[in-house]
Length: 164
Image (cartoon, rainbow, N blue to C red; front, side, top):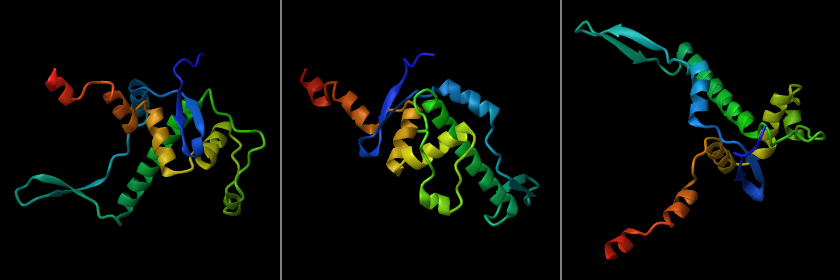
């Protein structure tokens, strides 16, 4: 397997990681295999005899269950992105262990290598919200605002076009 499509993402503290972005068509396969949970609605008939669907109150057990399903769905998508992005480039060091604070809260190091890699990404790679955003952009192959600005700087501005 070649790593011709690898990109570098720079995270906090100047740390750099390489990985392979996931194209939109690859995500289509994921979404097809894992449909988003469907929000439960309450069906009623209005005075005109028309069926209407109402959002459930937030404390309804079905609404609570739905929010949990969505949270789990989003977490699985995020983890799938990480695993695909880092598949050939990131390894958990043999001597790595769960940070002591997490151990005290009952977090144990995963036995499954993929689960352990996910723990490592959560606890070591992503150290800030900005890191999470940058990694997400890299996984999806999105341009950052700075990259868009840099690309735009390569083209003449409106003033230069009008003068020409």
